[in-house]
Image (cartoon, helix red, strand yellow):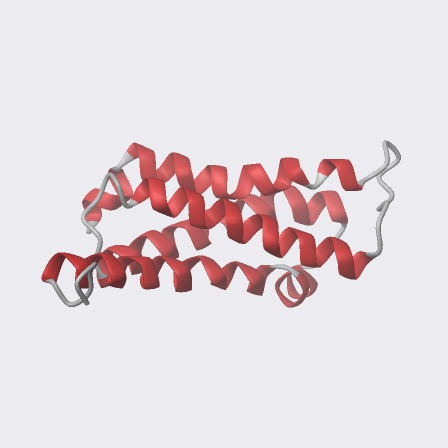
Length: 136
Protein backbone atom coordinates (compact mmCIF):
# COMPACT_ATOMS: atom_id res chain seq x y z
CA UNK A 1 0.00 0.00 0.00
CA UNK A 2 2.97 2.32 0.50
CA UNK A 3 3.54 2.24 -3.25
CA UNK A 4 0.21 4.02 -3.70
CA UNK A 5 1.44 6.94 -1.62
CA UNK A 6 4.56 7.11 -3.81
CA UNK A 7 2.61 6.95 -7.08
CA UNK A 8 3.04 10.45 -8.52
CA UNK A 9 -0.21 10.26 -10.49
CA UNK A 10 -2.24 9.39 -7.41
CA UNK A 11 -0.61 12.31 -5.56
CA UNK A 12 -1.21 14.70 -8.47
CA UNK A 13 -4.83 13.60 -8.81
CA UNK A 14 -5.28 14.13 -5.06
CA UNK A 15 -4.01 17.70 -5.35
CA UNK A 16 -6.23 18.29 -8.39
CA UNK A 17 -9.22 16.98 -6.41
CA UNK A 18 -8.73 20.08 -4.25
CA UNK A 19 -7.47 22.58 -6.83
CA UNK A 20 -10.11 22.12 -9.56
CA UNK A 21 -13.15 22.76 -7.30
CA UNK A 22 -11.25 25.66 -5.69
CA UNK A 23 -10.76 27.24 -9.13
CA UNK A 24 -14.36 26.43 -10.08
CA UNK A 25 -15.54 28.50 -7.09
CA UNK A 26 -13.99 31.75 -8.42
CA UNK A 27 -16.86 32.74 -10.76
CA UNK A 28 -19.23 32.68 -7.78
CA UNK A 29 -17.35 35.52 -6.07
CA UNK A 30 -17.05 39.18 -6.97
CA UNK A 31 -13.60 40.78 -7.24
CA UNK A 32 -14.28 42.17 -3.75
CA UNK A 33 -14.74 38.64 -2.40
CA UNK A 34 -18.52 38.78 -2.01
CA UNK A 35 -20.54 35.68 -2.82
CA UNK A 36 -22.70 36.31 -5.91
CA UNK A 37 -25.22 33.50 -5.30
CA UNK A 38 -27.12 32.35 -2.23
CA UNK A 39 -24.88 30.47 0.22
CA UNK A 40 -26.98 27.25 0.20
CA UNK A 41 -26.83 27.17 -3.62
CA UNK A 42 -23.06 27.73 -3.57
CA UNK A 43 -22.54 24.94 -1.04
CA UNK A 44 -24.69 22.54 -3.07
CA UNK A 45 -22.85 23.41 -6.28
CA UNK A 46 -19.49 22.88 -4.63
CA UNK A 47 -20.55 19.42 -3.38
CA UNK A 48 -21.68 18.51 -6.90
CA UNK A 49 -18.55 19.94 -8.54
CA UNK A 50 -16.25 18.36 -5.96
CA UNK A 51 -17.92 14.97 -6.29
CA UNK A 52 -17.79 15.10 -10.09
CA UNK A 53 -14.10 16.04 -10.07
CA UNK A 54 -13.29 13.43 -7.41
CA UNK A 55 -15.06 10.64 -9.30
CA UNK A 56 -13.33 11.56 -12.56
CA UNK A 57 -9.92 11.65 -10.91
CA UNK A 58 -10.55 8.37 -9.10
CA UNK A 59 -11.42 6.77 -12.42
CA UNK A 60 -8.09 7.98 -13.80
CA UNK A 61 -6.28 6.90 -10.65
CA UNK A 62 -7.65 3.37 -10.70
CA UNK A 63 -6.21 3.00 -14.19
CA UNK A 64 -2.73 3.22 -12.64
CA UNK A 65 -3.20 0.96 -9.59
CA UNK A 66 -4.95 -2.35 -9.04
CA UNK A 67 -8.42 -1.68 -7.61
CA UNK A 68 -9.42 -3.22 -4.33
CA UNK A 69 -10.92 -2.43 -0.95
CA UNK A 70 -7.59 -1.49 0.64
CA UNK A 71 -6.42 0.42 -2.43
CA UNK A 72 -9.61 2.47 -2.38
CA UNK A 73 -9.28 3.07 1.35
CA UNK A 74 -5.65 4.18 1.07
CA UNK A 75 -6.34 6.51 -1.88
CA UNK A 76 -9.47 7.90 -0.24
CA UNK A 77 -7.75 8.62 3.08
CA UNK A 78 -4.69 10.04 1.29
CA UNK A 79 -6.85 12.43 -0.72
CA UNK A 80 -8.89 13.29 2.37
CA UNK A 81 -5.71 14.29 4.20
CA UNK A 82 -4.43 16.28 1.20
CA UNK A 83 -7.73 18.16 0.87
CA UNK A 84 -7.88 18.94 4.58
CA UNK A 85 -4.26 20.13 4.66
CA UNK A 86 -4.70 22.33 1.59
CA UNK A 87 -7.92 23.80 3.00
CA UNK A 88 -6.28 24.50 6.35
CA UNK A 89 -3.31 26.13 4.61
CA UNK A 90 -5.30 28.18 2.07
CA UNK A 91 -9.06 28.28 2.59
CA UNK A 92 -9.26 28.59 6.38
CA UNK A 93 -7.07 31.72 6.53
CA UNK A 94 -8.65 33.16 3.38
CA UNK A 95 -12.18 32.77 4.74
CA UNK A 96 -11.25 33.68 8.30
CA UNK A 97 -12.63 30.41 9.66
CA UNK A 98 -11.67 28.71 12.89
CA UNK A 99 -10.82 24.99 12.69
CA UNK A 100 -14.02 23.86 14.45
CA UNK A 101 -16.18 25.98 12.18
CA UNK A 102 -14.28 24.77 9.13
CA UNK A 103 -14.84 21.08 9.94
CA UNK A 104 -18.50 21.62 10.82
CA UNK A 105 -19.21 23.67 7.68
CA UNK A 106 -16.82 22.31 5.03
CA UNK A 107 -14.36 19.68 6.23
CA UNK A 108 -16.81 16.85 6.84
CA UNK A 109 -17.97 17.02 3.22
CA UNK A 110 -14.61 15.63 2.13
CA UNK A 111 -15.54 12.28 3.70
CA UNK A 112 -17.28 11.61 0.38
CA UNK A 113 -13.82 11.00 -1.17
CA UNK A 114 -12.88 7.89 0.83
CA UNK A 115 -16.41 6.51 0.56
CA UNK A 116 -16.44 6.77 -3.23
CA UNK A 117 -12.84 5.50 -3.48
CA UNK A 118 -13.67 2.42 -1.38
CA UNK A 119 -16.77 1.75 -3.49
CA UNK A 120 -14.83 2.04 -6.73
CA UNK A 121 -12.04 -0.14 -5.38
CA UNK A 122 -14.51 -2.84 -4.36
CA UNK A 123 -16.31 -2.79 -7.70
CA UNK A 124 -12.97 -3.12 -9.49
CA UNK A 125 -11.95 -6.00 -7.22
CA UNK A 126 -15.28 -7.79 -7.70
CA UNK A 127 -15.09 -7.37 -11.48
CA UNK A 128 -11.56 -8.81 -11.47
CA UNK A 129 -12.77 -11.76 -9.37
CA UNK A 130 -15.75 -12.39 -11.67
CA UNK A 131 -18.43 -11.46 -9.10
CA UNK A 132 -19.84 -8.80 -11.39
CA UNK A 133 -19.59 -8.16 -15.07
CA UNK A 134 -21.48 -8.04 -18.34
CA UNK A 135 -22.84 -11.58 -17.84
CA UNK A 136 -24.10 -11.02 -14.30
